Image (tube, rainbow, N blue to C red; front, side, top):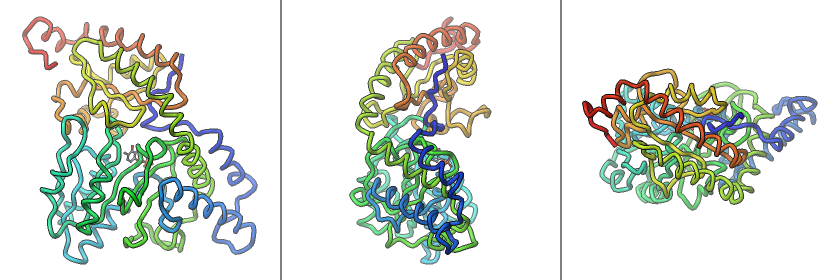
Length: 395
Ligand SMILES: *Cc1c(COP(=O)(O)O)cnc(C)c1O
């Protein structure tokens, strides 16, 4: 049995998205910047996609910029806010310790260039607190960037509250909503979001296309110089097929959200109920504030990488930390950020399920994981030390 349980890493392309993009990969290959009608057909497809995306998140079409993905959108939002802030002498940036590396590494770069970065702590439940933000803002704060939902533990952040807080103080607020888009309702107006990133391949569009939403009153600096595409803010001939697919997939996901959530939640509940029974295991992150499909568990006395290899042998695709960390020996920065002890964080497993999964697949996971945990523990010196009392159990 093949079970794809890594939807937080990427998703399959939906038939709807594939059908929508196909004409632009074949017959409709005109350049959207060309003035003849063959080019204008592609241009219109992009503008329709822009309207669709805007309506899915409560924005206006002119506030939508297409990018090459979530990473580019995060980079542009942060670098732009930093540059504009610096012009006014504001060189302080606020984020959190458990952001995606597209955010954290961009902030690191700015720190080297003389910006001050404050990373808010994330509490044990995987949620940041507005009080901590309140204690960190300064007169020279140029940006607050807090992710909508975390990619490793799935926890949802109080984005609406943070939005209100920042708007009252006129501080630009960006959110990386890559894990939320298509899975959670998003309303940039109601949530007072100034900038928002999303990525097509996390909701059944192809890889290599994303969106940066920027509120029209918020200035934006471009990253890529060249032609005047995307209102001069993102040069480069547009990924027409990808953009069309992204819009179709986002609309499909948003229209089906309630039904999908109702399908996914019982599968997640079953995973948590059964895998949570494995001795010396712990479920990470809040049980209430989470995206439907992401489950993160730590098993004491084993290595996540070994777990993944054995799951692969059983046809199961899963992850131990963020994909970018795979292959490195450091445990997930997200788990460390929520206070999971170093040794325990090594034994983590992320299962991220979607509407394409079935209960049969979940039952397969539930059969396989406990056996693998037992096998790995039987070979683990750390586990034996724990069992013999030489080393205390952490949980
Ligand atoms: C996947 C992901 C990204 C990166 O998106 P790409 O389109 O792959 O560049 C950024 N942030 C989060 C939270 C993600 O899960």
